[in-house]
Length: 283
Image (cartoon, rainbow, N blue to C red; front, side, top):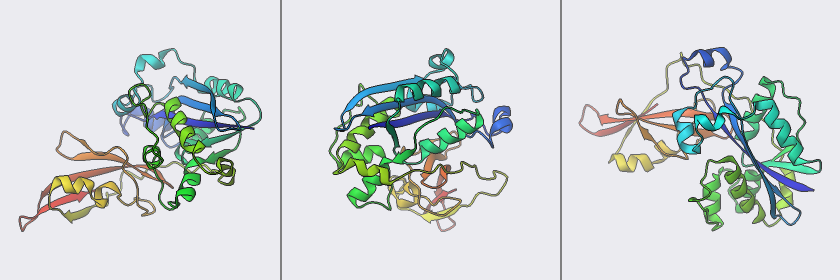
């Protein structure tokens, strides 16, 4: 049996007030734009790779953030196949005797929603979680490590000049390197994945806010309050893998990731309270 390590990239709406989001947002929160994968043989060696861009049908304009981190351009997607054709090509490449692996449950959740939305009937193998295997092996089962952090822990050096992160096939390859370093990689089959329901918060509800005393903005950005804010749905601590970006209104915005409920926007603002003490407001 071979292992196929899968990674996906997806687009999101430019605005949650856009006609595209209002039309399909509840059923298609993120639209896939790339399938990347590598095949790993019984000796846990990478023997083949697959990379396929996908032309979006609803969120047709690439979000600037997505284009920036993936280096995928609008022109790259212009002549790409649509979703069902891309998945069929991927399934044919996979073959028959294989197990699918991903790093965490984000990819399977987005894949499941896209397959349901586009009524894709192409069969795929059951999917297993390489991130959970890594967590149990390293004694960090309660803390979901990002791929880059896992590589650092295992002293695997990425080739970011030629193989940057946030390219689906590159991330799949890096996951394969982490997977191969596990004492018994085959135990990944003990960690089947179940897709979670993707949902956005009701944006008409008032945002929850927290006001915290800080010593400096520099320290604040590194604090648990900024880097591990609570999920607005379940309260579990989320991760902010890419840091914060300054907005035009002087606030800072980031995407945080909850292992159970997906992505959430986090906003930070800095100022002073009535006593003249420096504060950070998080919403």
